[in-house]
Image (cartoon, rainbow, N blue to C red; front, side, top):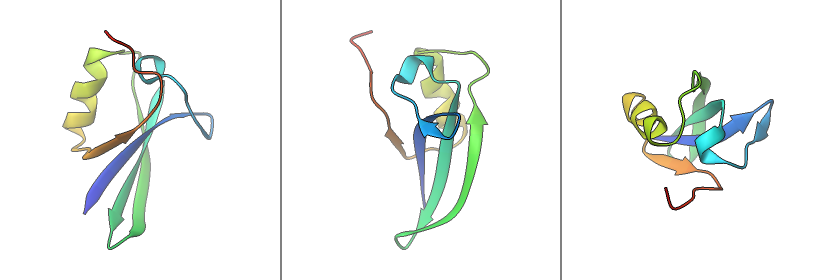
Length: 69
């Protein structure tokens, strides 16, 4: 099973990784979504978000707007 996170805001994909308020995390098995959940970022940004995703055992991240920092 893979866990795929997408930057998320108000039902839409959010365009900037470091400022996202939440991630929608999908559990995918055999090419099918078997579960999903929304994980709030609790105001942390940029580098701390990588730790948040690791805590939730995310395998793949889909996002936009990751800068050089």
